[in-house]
Image (cartoon, rainbow, N blue to C red; front, side, top):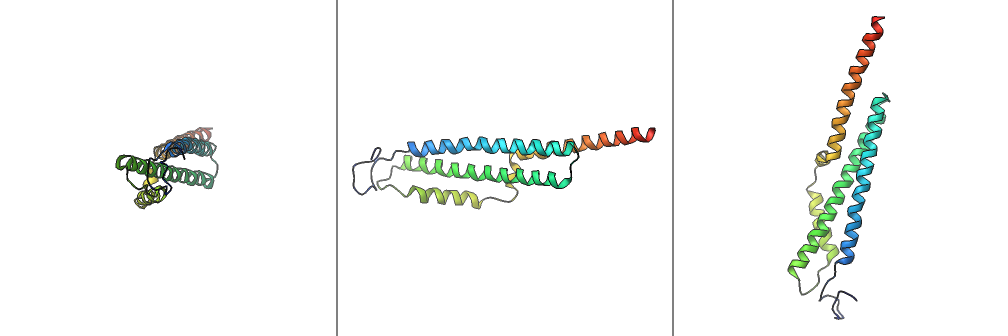
Length: 154
């Protein structure tokens, strides 16, 4: 098998990480999909506020943004766990090849256990979304008030 020694046990020898690194690259590309989803949800929510659509629709977009932020956090944790494991094995060069899947799972769970429900609110796109939503609501209220005053003047 390329990248491994010819040992029958399969537990010693050189490890090639090119397949893992390629898969990791694909996962990182998936983050672009998450970002696109967040941009779309944000745009829809802002449109709903502008058109003064019912609040439950805006709430649904808020929930969608939370879901995207949580997916982004989970994907980042998984990528970090894989990268950390690869770097550790490359540096240590153990005589016996460890169970990489198990090591990644342990690191991933350790990162996930540090999560709090408020973590996703530190997501840059989520924070930007909430800020834009607040500003747009203020503008809409001001515009509605001005329109009401104009209508009452006649």
